Image 1: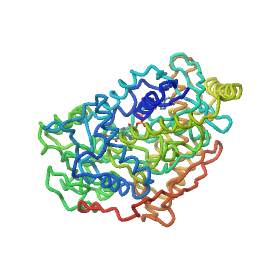
Image 2 (image 1 turned 135 degrees about the vertical axis):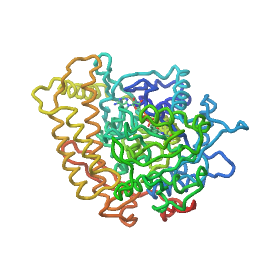
Image 3 (image 1 turned 120 degrees about the vertical axis):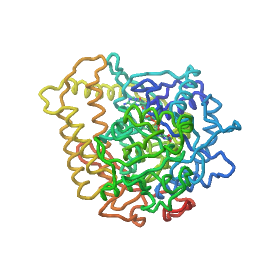
Image 4 (image 1 turned 180 degrees about the horizontal axis):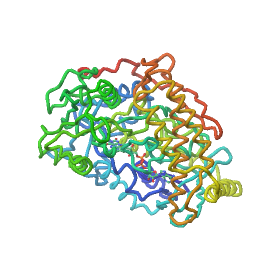
Length: 580
Ligand SMILES: Cc1cc2nc3c(=O)[nH]c(=O)nc-3n(C[C@H](O)[C@H](O)[C@H](O)COP(=O)(O)OP(=O)(O)OC[C@H]3O[C@@H](n4cnc5c(N)ncnc54)[C@H](O)[C@@H]3O)c2cc1C
């Protein structure tokens, strides 16, 4: 049997590939929410893959590697761009309703940091349609058995290999053991470490923490992506497609200020020009906002400072056709209709470039354990992900993880030692029981979570300093210690959300410490990691991936490994005129 933890886009894509390639396998799909509630459902803008005749795999490769500030593994990027069109066409064949050109061919839209139009989309509900397509396709395979609302707590590692996991069945509160010959983790991101994020409440880094505690390092965790355009009221995303369709960003004086930050010259209104101005990459645009705020050029709102996203010139027809969700959420959550008014927006935590260390086959260093999707770092995103590469990544590497797992099973070692696995599962269960029963604890989940979020926002945001990061490391180490003293209010079994939130907090604290410690150690500025005290990129010392290794009672140790460079030597990221 093969287990998958996580059933968002990556988990479902992996399950389908497994079922197709090895019909005899028994596949367990384990997820803490129903499939369609996974975060992939919220993705708006689209998925990148070369399809038009003026584009090429080489362009997609170069945009991705340059966009990632040369921290991407180039063999992995090569694989991504080659496989992308195949995966997107496969989705089409499974029924994904991609938006169309008038002549019936697949439509693509411009996206930030991309030199050509290559982002496939289904209006601005691309993730919703992708996830539906994958979920419905998965239903035709009887070998895929779903375990909805099961919360994975621990990997079972014996004999130097991963042989299953334990999970709490939420409905009953019972701990279930899943013995398996291989496990693929597809648990999604960890944006909830921060208070202001586009991420759904379930994105608490559980998948990363599962692997990390089992001895697999977390790679490049210091790279946290801010998306430039979230609604200040809620953090709800206004997709980059707003700018892909021609929306512009203004400061309080009505100036398209990105031209003042190396992303000019100003482009004609309503005609986005590739890789410049509003189609600059997310790290640069978010950083420009930070500077505008310092200069006093931002617009005050009741939720803090903002800039304005102006789409009025696109007209009601285009907005309704291409950006219906954007119009809906702007009206619902800000009371602003983009057809008649510019919408206040500000940078918001969106995506983790880092994650579980895997090789190009989506294999982790732990035998029998594979990882794909946002929880993994196969390293196609480097220091800054380009918008629309993530949906593609979860398809390409979800499938790749499945193929690698099948290969592993074929040359496989036999069944594990049931006695040893049972003892490990019992230990996991005892840990949870002790947490439920603990009394006299001084700490609350909500209290610690708030302190963690404040620490991350204050010290691990768009710009960082050594001093601030050192403070964050100290604070997070302290919070991890205090976590041992939390007390739950709910000791019942059925849907004990108090328990689940406590476990999620544990995952987030581990991930947050990996972010802060890796960020403190990286004494340079690259992509989304900007140090005010080390403002330059330092290829001599830091053209390397960081690897944070878990330690239960101390901060993680950070090691480094070389970036795979095949054909693109590090250069200058130039977004000033549409050419790299
Ligand atoms: C608002 C928004 C818009 C976005 N728009 C785009 C876009 O247009 N284009 C693009 O390329 N990217 C976009 N992204 C990024 C992209 O959507 C995500 O990176 C991607 O969908 C992650 O997919 P995933 O399969 O890795 O994880 P998810 O879809 O988040 O799924 C994770 C799964 O893991 C399960 N899980 C987690 N922890 C546990 C546990 N302890 N036990 C059991 N199960 C667990 C969950 O139940 C879930 O099924 C967007 C992200 C957001 C937040």
